[in-house]
Amino acid sequence: MRRASWAVGAVEYAAAPPPSSPPSAGLLPAPSPSMSPGPVPSFADVPIGYWAHDEIGTSAQRKITAVCADDDQGRPYCPDRGVTRAEMAVFILRAYP
Image (cartoon, rainbow, N blue to C red; front, side, top):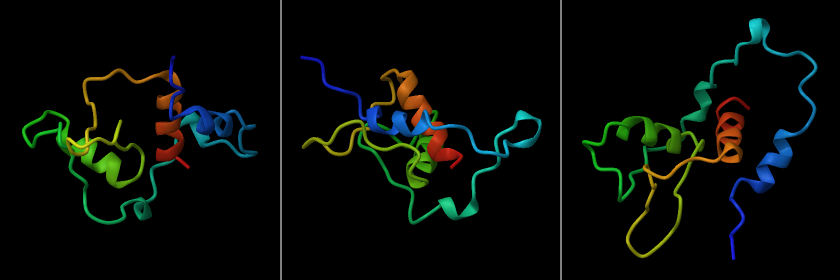
């Protein structure tokens, strides 16, 4: 049995009509500085030397992304797992609200 993606509910939100005034020149607006609440989280499977360690921590801090699964082994991020189109749509929506 295939489990539904965590992004299913959020993608319905993404399908809403575009805002009445789109960003100029087709560019996305810069993320708001208020999107940086609290300390940068750490993940059990993203060691400090990992090439995207800082970027993963920052995106989790800004609530753009989160753990891929909760288990008794810590907080796995699953950095080597592929991202679906639906999940990427949610990342973009969260980054540029």
